[in-house]
Image (cartoon, rainbow, N blue to C red; front, top):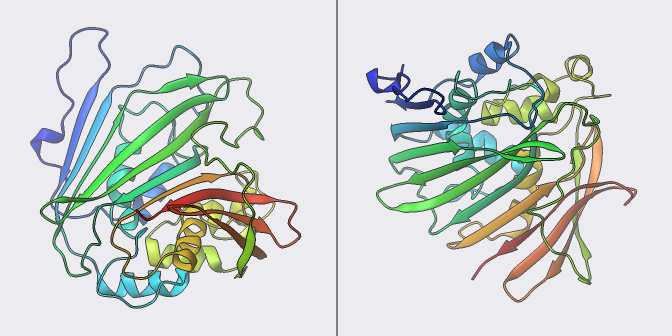
Length: 306
């Protein structure tokens, strides 16, 4: 439970609300997804939307070894004395959900679209490190597509060594439901020449296996029936699984400094086979994950290893 500082800050009239949440350990993720199903906040927004600042903190956290092993197995990362570059996001997931379920955040969690993601690793994190996690949401960007929020996260083991930005979209009233592909903050492909790196088999139970490795039990990923309740024809792969699977194929296990940016384009319906393609650049790779028939683009991005 958050301590007394988790109460809403006193604000002047008409000023956006603020909230600070602090935890001594990581909040459990699965119960928070269950809570989100009963969320009565609006799912769509208009130009008058105002958003305050929400801060979150986990003061001390150790990585559960069993969870890490399951994550490596389902995402394709080899054993290492360091955490996979995308794994700190899993450690912060409970904190993120607490923040998104805060009364200060104006939109309900079901229906938010994860549009882009950026990770910057200053140095690898030892698997047995004691970590501190800080996150914040501050303000909103209104566009024709809806309201775009950025969730910032820092994971540190005594020094800031891993940073993340997560982009979410809440559609505006009147925006077609299919208009979800990001139009900004996307990698520049230019005239790059891509070649096939590998192909991934994403089985029908992938969402459930990734949920056990990440705590992300969002029903759109678990079963065809639960996904159809939210408008999908079948369960869809977690975007963070797709990101992690690409990173595992393109980065060495003990990569020290790296920056990774991904734009999510279309949901990957399960089961499926996807093809990872990459093009070398001076500082790393451009990459994209496509359907096996090469007609549907699931995501594209870039990896830099200066």
